[in-house]
Image 1 (cartoon, rainbow, N blue to C red):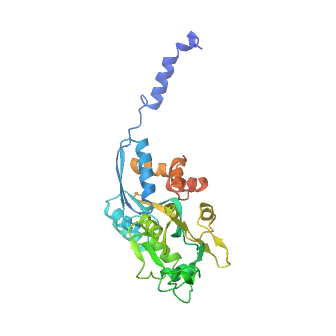
Image 2: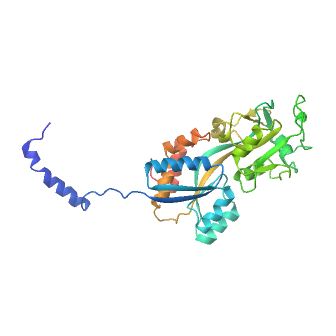
Image 3: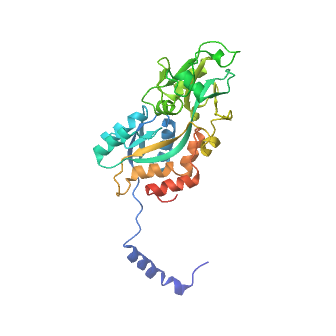
Length: 315
């Protein structure tokens, strides 16, 4: 519907007034471009890759370069300034945090980005359905601090119909999963020397899937058709499965938060690249990727709280 002629005469003056109030013509925001380097957790590698692809789709001038050698590689890279993002599947230790603060004069920013349920996997033909933490400790450690009286060497000690020695697979000491299992499943004890240490979670699951006598641990997101995830038997005899629901409810004892560590000067504005990446990760799109890859997405109230804590506006 055309405007009356008397109104049209005033429109140029209204436009000039608006331009004067805002200080000139509206300017489009400059495009976000550049390279983000990420060094750290192998567990988070698939998430970081997909988040990087989603960010590049939003901002074609952005590239993510990913190095996934284990959580313990993130802190020294952040200290040295060779990375801008440090994904970790465990919290920084006190010594890692102290080294960062000594180098930069302030603490690193820790951003929770997802939850993960660390699971113990067996071959798909293995009928064992659940084990207690004491049994897992007796399989994987030589210290047995969780209370087992003797080590578990053979499958028939767990199920009379089974036979053969137990084959053990795990991660190397650079992995956050290695440290979490040692702390939570081995009650702070030490791994046996005959645990096969593999470089990646996918390699652990593949080894178990090809070995009917095998058992190994990895994040639930690495569950594949050739293996089964064991439940955990509690002290009262109840079995808790490693599921998203149990992780969110706090019922599964091997649930862990996944973190993204950043080097951001307190009180200064976020650099555009880091801001764009974290905005994506803590968005509905970013958390849909978390669920798609088999990890546990953060609930919306928790996402909103995290955004407030780190100074990002609601999505």
